[in-house]
Structures are given as C-alpha cells and as structure tokens.
Image (cartoon, rainbow, N blue to C red; front, side, top):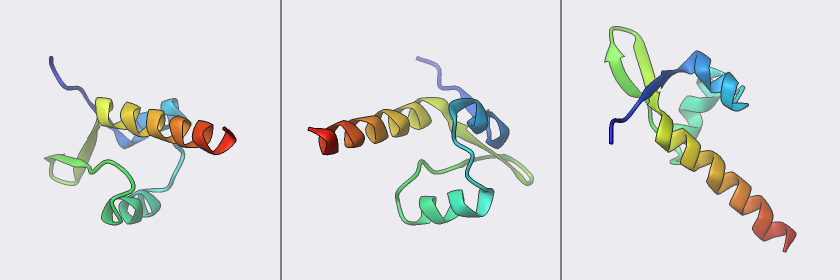
Amino acid sequence: MAQRLIPYEALKDKCISYSKPHLWRLEKAGQFPKRVPIGPGRYGYVEAEIDAYLEAKIAERDEKAA
C-alpha cells in the first residue's frame, strides 16, 4: 500500500490547527506523529499516522466516557 505524505497546511483539513512549534513539542514528547523531511525546509506527515492519531484520540475520549 502506498503511503501518502501531507503538508502541514493539510492538517487543518483534518481539524488539527496546532501551531508548528506546538506540534514540534508534541512530537518531541512522543505525543504526535513525527514529520518526514521531504526537502530543504519542507516536511510532510504520513497521512495514515495522522489518521491513526485521530482515531486514538477518539478512542481515548470514548474510554473516559464509559
């Protein structure tokens, strides 16, 4: 299966509106998928990892509600 990289700007389409510095802090803490360098000063995110992150957040919410 091909993996798709999405740019930082596409995270808003997935309702993730964190600033870049905040995302970097979350990455460093192991709480958000790591960026993939794709060129000088350009990074992308593996879309499947972002989707898995969102699914985990939803599952976490549902566990707390149960």
